[in-house]
Length: 131
Image (cartoon, rainbow, N blue to C red; front, side, top):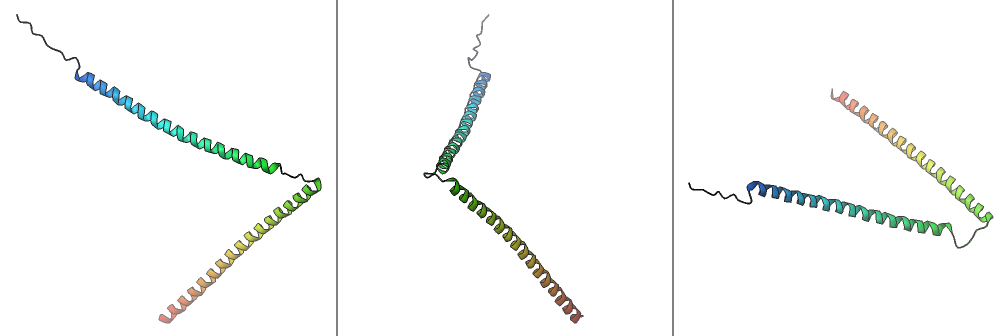
């Protein structure tokens, strides 16, 4: 009896497919990881920029709070009085501007209404003449 040896390949199709799937999953993992790193890097840069802006604003505010000259109590009260007057004037001005805007819009609407009424009357007169 002749013994036949069957040679089994060491690497079968299923092993190749499994290896390709594992390599594909690894590539997808690396792509997702790079996207997440890129996103967090951008956000970190934005946060650093905001932090720098905040520090600049704080430095500017500190220079405002400590002027080079100290004012007396009378001077600060006068300054506050002038600021209050400016605030009340600004409020009055804005109220008057709002009143003027609303009155102008009302006037424009009245003029449009009157023009449309006269046009309607003219059209009716022309229709009567034609008939």
